[in-house]
Length: 156
Image (cartoon, helix red, strand yellow):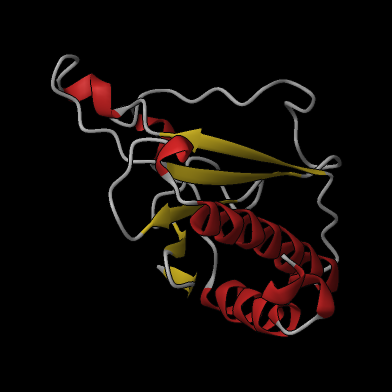
């Protein structure tokens, strides 16, 4: 489900997240065009992507604090390597960035690194996605933050 978008990128919630809402949370940022990695971005696109990851992180933290959930850390992961599972020699990887929140008091695996089984397994079957209320409030926070001095593009 789309949460927010900029000129070149989309922030989305997963209907089938890699981690459950009750434990960690998971959203992703994808370019609106196909590239395999960051090195193919223009400088302006790179700035836009960095700003967008920061906006996503900050807006999510603000919303979760209002919900009495304190996020300890965030893991940003540039992903594309699962494209090679389908055809190792003819893969068409597309950059996308997963944002995984880590909640100290609930997360049983912190400080371990995130490790994910193949998507074809049963592992992800019962993970709870973000709610419509979560998404609506993240959108509000992004809209508010976008208009602050910190996120004014003139300062970038």
